[in-house]
Amino acid sequence: MRTVANIFHRKGRHNITITPDATVLQALKIMSEKNIGSVIVTDNDGHYCGLATERDYARKVILLGRSSGETKVSEIMLEHLPRVTPDHTLDECMGIMSAHNIRYLPVFSNNEFYGVISVLDIVKETILAQQETIEQLHSYIHSTI
Image 1 (cartoon, rainbow, N blue to C red):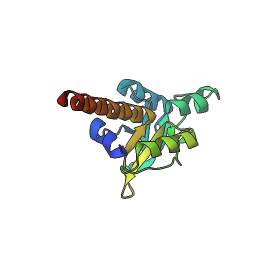
Image 2: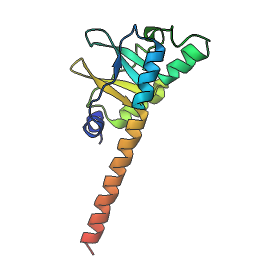
Image 3: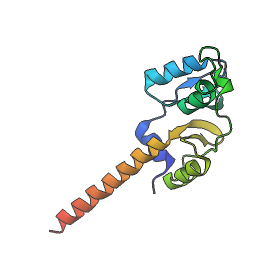
């Protein structure tokens, strides 16, 4: 069974962060430059505070007629997301995401922030696992012929 650890083994731990006092516009620029849909919000000491996503921007800035250049990340970030560990299975993560209608999960190892996984990460890892299974079955079939 694939776990969150498999995702980080594949994609690495490249955490893109921003501070709560940064503007939403700054967060959006980072997301655009890095081609990502969220940024991790950390305090000045690097401790996890929450997550700011494109969805938060759409719902909490655009739809409310607020200014991206004046609104702080702290005003729109998600602070109380469910947390998972590297040992959680992909099925468990999908269940959590579905139950909470979220696309991202912060990952903690020994109560220390580790990184974030997305629903896209889970889909990619699931496809990779299926491809590996197909290759193994293919090799098995050809080895018995």
